[in-house]
Length: 161
Image 1 (tube, rainbow, N blue to C red):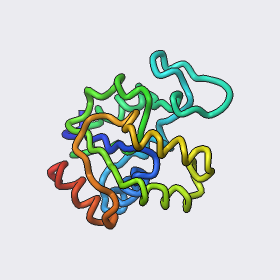
Image 2: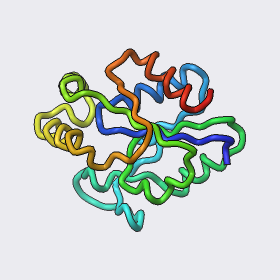
Image 3: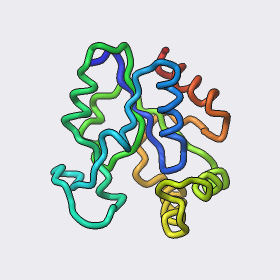
Image 4: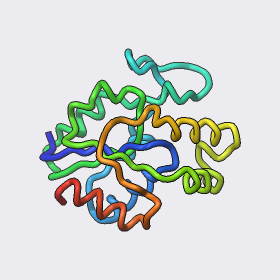
């Protein structure tokens, strides 16, 4: 395995993609799980599903996660994103870092993005998940209402980098 593997998780709009991009900009190995590992499938079997995109079917390719985590080329690898089959590979991570933000900031971010969560129905669903913390694993929480550079500095502190 890589010397250290970290999962950077959190609900939609909490900053996972932005953190991933900033980690990469700073020269760290960071995987954008939502765009590089994700597909629609059954969280228990991994079998791809057909039809509409559904939150509960947003899963990561377990074999790819394990392959990347096993790569000893990097001192540390950050996996950024969320998946509904986390239980299949949670054992790979030295720590789980959970990005969180207050509801007002989250709603503002969602209203101003072009990605999933921009329309009113999706936004309502995301805000309901945020209120209950449904689908978010246990971990060390970082408030992402702060500037991105401070958030990433904290991620790196937690990773000992």
